[in-house]
Length: 475
Image (cartoon, rainbow, N blue to C red):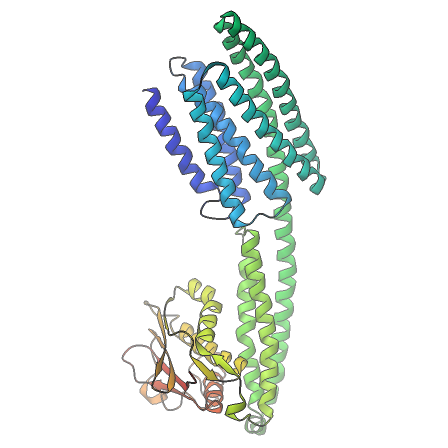
């Protein structure tokens, strides 16, 4: 096995590990950071052992030093991410710097020799270890933990030891080279390699302590978040059951049904954002460890659904008031509502194996009350997804386009469809084909669409249900 072949395999392996664990294609996480730190530390130790065991293959010595540099270069990025938030741009370019520094170190070791090599390598090593010590100091100030103090002490000791030894070795190497005795400084340099390897190992122990502390803190935070979300979920579930119970009592009488059907629609429509809150809460409470960006995204979804539930209550209260003239309704972009509904239902469709195909014409303006229009579109999406629960093939196709002076939205699923005997009744109040249905959703949706001078119809379809919504187009 030649030195060149070993070098090629090393470079390709290093690039592959870097692509999988660093911040090139995804955000840095503690797990992937730990993998890179462990892999680079083990590679440093393994290649050094091979270098001592196989003196005929000096390439292992070069690789050992290069992996040590890679380890320290990444520690700068990793420790900084622990004491301050890094943007994706910073993570990406920090990862690029780790790879560039490692390969540059390897190149210098290959093509530069003697005293020049020693000076370049010493400068690079001292800068990297000093930078790690600086970041360790910033981490210690921000966290005040035993692990951060230990890391700072060990890295600082490593830097001071490297500085002292390399100055002494450099002076002796210079004197030996001036006198023409080249073997002496080489032997001393190899002996120092053992010492710096030991100091680096101690520093890695400090890094392991910091990493363990960080993982423990994340787990504690996740456990606390789960407990808080569990309380939130139970509270929401209790309130929903209470609301359902109250509204069911009101709907028990025929007079209440005839006079105020909006009461029943309140429970029906509130179920959608509250079920969405439940799904997002369960997603946060599972065993999967999320990074900060994913947690913020899910929590924002919960907040938006919570606000949407409040808006639905207000919108349905407005149903008791007189209708607003069409020309006084606000102008809204229907394509935005369709895309927003698809995003909100995304997790549900993913969990149920539904394939979504969106064909949306951008910027189609209509006059409508935004909360009520959102309720209609959400109801069409939800009905389609639920209809395909027992279907082998689950395809949901949503098309939005302009036809003459109308905006046309079509929602088509691959479920069992609606039988001919029920097609005329599907929009009747209190009629439902669902075991747990209330017979409110499609009735209310059609009523809302009529208020906006539109139509909601069920079209004949060979397979699945095919709903068509039309509204007057403004642009």
